[in-house]
Length: 78
Image 1 (cartoon, rainbow, N blue to C red):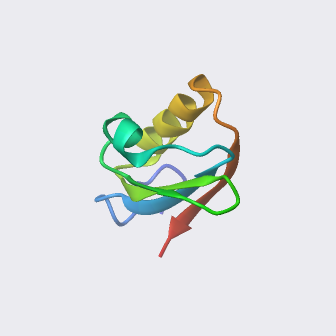
Image 2: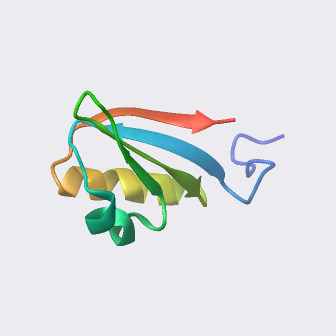
């Protein structure tokens, strides 16, 4: 298998992304492509949902950066 071969699962993966800010799910749902948005007791927010591929994941992370939302964690959910 070459180093540039596509991942076996081309339907994407589910990711959980935590940011150090409280986001209102009603206000932000459309901005994050249908990801679920859950506010946590510690003031952070978890966005979770299917991401099509690595390019889409990097785009989502760039959008969080552009909104000045501090990134705490990005986890691929198995």
